[in-house]
Image 1 (cartoon, helix red, strand yellow):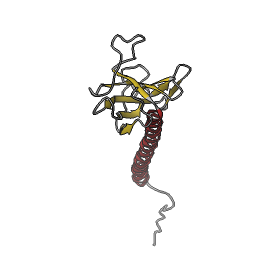
Image 2 (cartoon, helix red, strand yellow):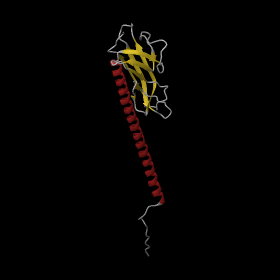
Image 3 (cartoon, helix red, strand yellow):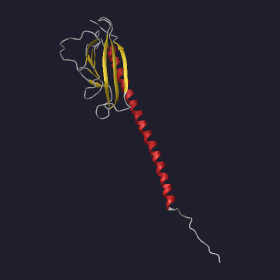
Image 4 (cartoon, helix red, strand yellow):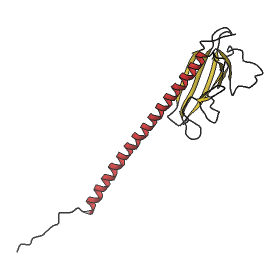
Length: 194
């Protein structure tokens, strides 16, 4: 007598299902890691682009203001005094600070600032009427300096601007991998040594 055994080959065993689901979890974990890295990298790239554009705009704006000025009223480590005891004479001593006071051709004073100690940590231009932030509010500056050089009281002064700009990490410091250093030197074109 012949016995016929029937086997049910229509389904999957529990072990086969566990192996396949384990492989799917591993593959999705790898793909998720790749996507996260890509998105994180694009965020850093976007931030660096914003930092570069803002830094170049601030540097260009300050350079144009300095070129057009007719006199340097002072370079100060903090806000300029309202009534200076020792009036600023010239840049022969190479003064350095974070505030630059200039006299424009229309005889109005303009103050350029990039004070990293200021709670706003911004780069700004101000006159009697208005103050303009030259950088985005989400960015901060560290290591800022404005230095003035002049070989003699009758020569044209040269201003050196240097600052680091980056994304605010929430505590007023530059977030890692977002900082960029900007530096230039400008000659005052309309200098009037009076």
